[in-house]
Amino acid sequence: MPYQDSLFSDEQEQENVSPRLLHFEDCASAIDDLFIRALNEKGENGFLEFLDFVVRFNNLSVYNAMLVKVQRPGASAVASRLQWERHGRKVNPDGIPIVILQPFGPVRFVYELGDTDGRPLPGQLDSPLLAFGNLTRREYDATCQAAARYGVEVVETDNYGTHLAGSAIGRAIYPEGYTGNRDTCFRIRLNAKQGLPTRYATLAHELGHVYCGHVGADPKNRWPNRSKLPHSIRELEAEAVAWLVCQRAGVKTRSKEYLQSLMRDTDLTCVSMYGIFEAANRVESRTVPK
Image (tube, rainbow, N blue to C red; front, side):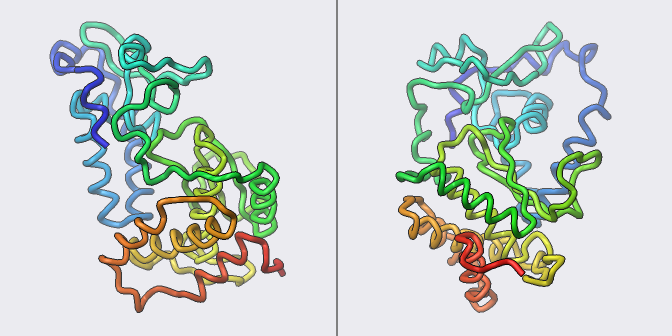
């Protein structure tokens, strides 16, 4: 979505900032960790996604775009408080600043779209991630509790940008120093800034990845390791799970359009319909854990 372009320009950043540049190693490990995770999840598409992120922020220096990527994965647009106000939006009181380099100065603070409220930006309401419906908090919590019985920890984070609704990982790739619940085998992170229907649709999608074996096998052998499938197949299966679950729960998404786009580039003979239906059963907790 090209709404970053009109916010502010950093054309002078390339000049006279070398004395204030952060050391390469301060950012290298964080960027490379994100990159390896993207490759594990999306294959060659992960490489292109990294490049596309920097291209989208073409009015920031490449280095500053990298800093945004580290601090706010999934960021769609960033600007200062004053610049947001000029576009009819205000930074929320609990908005989390992103630190970037300041031309002719040390640093400056900018805020991501998800930390603001006000007049919609062009294309903002067309996001395929958004979902709508009268889902109750009780239904959402029940889905999280059902996931916990399958060894899936669900957490919400304020550190995702509006282009990243959620993610799922297996215990084998938990980050170094992780201090959470080690009794769980999988962890799903959801963007806390999204509305409840959107978080539910994202939860169903990420649970689809887990229950279809896309992030590893279940230690109790309830599903196999299918993490080596092509990204398009994994994404289609997970989105099919989300579409089924959301339709049955009365949550409206754009999953059908997304599914149709995925189908054009996917060998459907490699898709497991049994895996999709069984995963949907587990999301709805109709399959009792054993």
